[in-house]
Amino acid sequence: MSSKRIAARSSSIVILALFRDAVGKAGASLRGFDPEAAPTVIQSSLETCSCTGSPHDGRKVEDLQCLAWNAEATCGAVALNQWSDKTACSWVGCSSCVQSPCPLEPTGFNWIIGTDLDSECTLQYVGAYQFDSVSNKFQRVDSSSFNVMGSFDAQDLNPGNLASQLADGKMWLPPYPGGAAEWVAGFTPYDTMDRYKNSSGVLALGGPAFMVVAKFKGRLSHMTWYVLNQRTLIDGADDSHGCVNPTCTPSGNCWGCGYGEVDILEGNYCEPNLCMTLSNGDYEGGGSCLYGDTSRLNVWNPDTDGEDPLIAAVFDSGGVTVYINPTWEGLSENQANPQLNARPTKAQKVVKAPPSERGMWKDLMDTNQLEATSPMSPSAVSPLKPRQQLCAAPGWDVNDADLYFVKTPAPCCRGHLPVNTTGTLRCPGGAAPPTSR
Image (cartoon, rainbow, N blue to C red; front, side, top):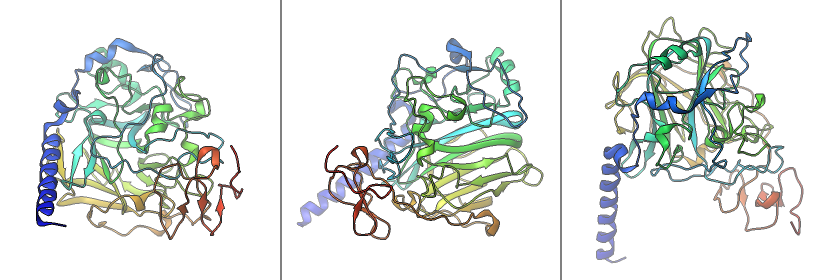
């Protein structure tokens, strides 16, 4: 390669890095989107939620107000933010899944918070960040971030306290009509919020790495904060109680197809502590997009870890790293900056859940997060399960000589490519590729 071409290429890389850095600092202005929309605008389309979960004690809030699913829209497609490398999870769309066929699309993720009438959960802000491998920084994804400029007071997410905040015009994060499984109320970005009008809608997080950050006020107990595949959130996170988007497929929300789940904080089964679990969402022992063997690893103790916690969870090739009260330039009591360094300088507590070969972790990059402040308890790791053959979608590069690889097109798996794990092309379940569709 000539010196001129090398110089030109180097200049292009520098220009690209400077441009992406400027975009990150510009924030919402380049995305046609106001991340701090006034809280009163959400009241224009509120109605009683059809889904309020199935809490353990049976108590519900019958008049819980939410923004209904958009009946005029189709089911929608997963859209990733501008910094994502669009890495796809090879588990998506397995034909042996009863909910198949689920859409063949880029793999994205987003956060959801679940609460019930016993929850202590007051949220100051929540920020979603995509790692940008060019600038080596986390860039804030405004469509999935709320109150990151500190425009509003903290919101109490206990469903019993929402009506009074709504009446006072202080609700900036309305409940989500898709529910949150065992919790009365769920909170996540969804397209019928007025903030997404005339914008590109909810943009998901994905490879090469991503992070979610939440600042809470007061005590934090009996709640959940977890990450799901964006497709599951589009279709409805609480499929078991019929809380799916009516414009979506009746087959379900694809959660049962190994689309992935990570519980960053989970109150059920760990009270009074909040635990982390990566093994939920496992598909018949074959794993999931975000599968890990960690189960009920203690992350937060409300009696010893203090109040007003700042919590950040990073997803990269090293698994999940959770920081309790990190010292991170750009994260403060009331604000989360548009751009953050790749890692904090220190943290009160660092809890890590390792990756598994039965997840898409190998397709992510290492952002060199801090080491755990204490070793993981052996009881937090569930026993290994036998690996099953998996299904890959057409055009997705899932080459990995140690695990499996995809051959050139052959009819199989309702349009998917056959997977080779033993030297012979087979569809998931062991069937040979059909000669015709």
